[in-house]
Image 1: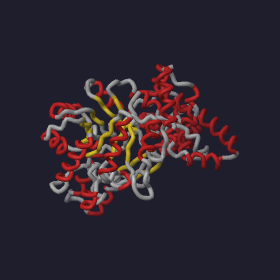
Image 2 (image 1 turned 45 degrees about the horizontal axis):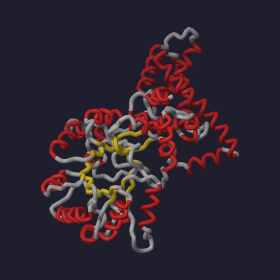
Image 3 (image 1 turned 30 degrees about the horizontal axis):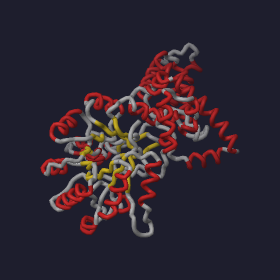
Image 4 (image 1 turned 90 degrees about the vertical axis):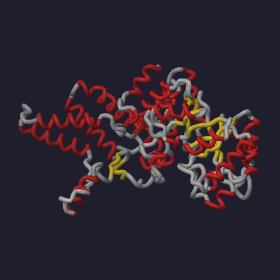
Length: 454
């Protein structure tokens, strides 16, 4: 099994102080294998505050803020023969901040901090200059995407582990960890939709609201505000300002509406011409739409949203199109969606009856808002388990308890098969499957993996 990492950020003083000894003990009892933290002492915060961070976290409660507490944490972690490492993974350090970073590193060495997570070349160069002998991890902030980046790091520095960028796909992870079999890696259980996050972007992505660079149009469907070639027409002297504004049009075409309109047209033509004359153009367009959308992440009936939800209406329209076309190349997709609709409606009916109505079911879904991720990204974990040099998998921990989920995953790995009880809708296997399928291109990848496991 992978190691389980826990971030430590708290105070041992004031109203929100934690009992350090009991707190660390509870985390170890909860299966923590490693610890990491950020350090923002007064000699930094008095000068730069918490908005300018030495480690990419910007709140006081996410940091260890005094040397005394840090020392106590290091000693407590070492009592369990476990390791603790500290992030120095800000996007950059200036001539004003670097001397304070050097002071921190001196303190880390004195305290026997086990590792440093490095977020940029300046830290690596400094550690090399002072002949730093403790472990060095490459932070996800370094945005390591390819084998040349890994090769450069391994050839120039003594690297313990590389934390891959959270935006890379599972296929890309497979390629990298397979090529560098003697290198330890850490990966993120949940990735990120934006390729320009971390080191490549200085914006703070908010996720729940509109990001700076995208507009959320409808559940998991993203649209860029501007065309990729916007500079070409903005700089075109032959276009008027009005024409440039028109070129910047960001109208969004809903593929489900397009499919529905085509089906209406086809049905109307069939009603006038039983032999189906004049349908080839519409059918070709329908086939094109299905081919362009067959790997979408939202092609499933969401039983937590009700029959009249726009997503479920879209899926029924999509299924109607597949049945109309009746093409062998779409058989797997049709069966997949049929199963999703059938199991979804069955679950919807039984759960609604059990809870005495849809309002309570909706309330339950809101209560379990993170279900798509928390209640089982089982397949991703199983995928990572195939690679011996993926040492650690990082879980998001905001407001959530993972012990139960980890126990289920360990049971599955030890048994070598996925028990039928984990395929229940409430565990959200299918929802997790679709949420993550954008990483693969082949929508049925997880289904094939299940066959192999069973």
